[in-house]
Image (cartoon, helix red, strand yellow):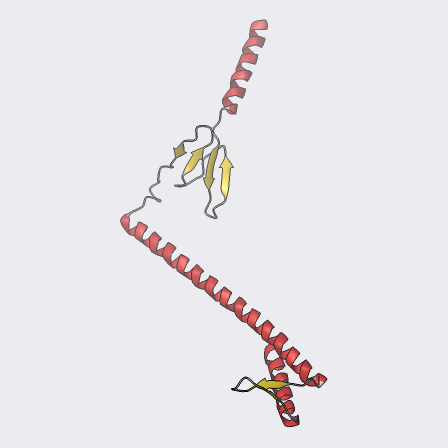
Length: 155
């Protein structure tokens, strides 16, 4: 009976140590997120064994073997994707810049209109750098222009 009990304990101990020594694999998925698992990923994804710190490259399957043509096609696809992303980023920056300029122009137009409405003395600088204050007709034209700018920039 004690031999049987000792044998059972030995088998259980051996099983526990075998599972405790399983490798842990580390890899990056297609989104660049680092993943960890006790089983390697499917496909031709390079993995790193955490236990041994040894790079393990998955064997390419028949469907994933690279030919020179497919490598060139993949490189072209990556390049096109990078160019499209760059163009998209540039367009986004241009839209943000346009939005920022429109907001700033709106604030300036509202401020200008407020000056005309408050009856403040409004002047323009001539070619000599001297101030020329607007008369009533100039004020009316300026107010109309300011109202037009508010409608244009403050939608």
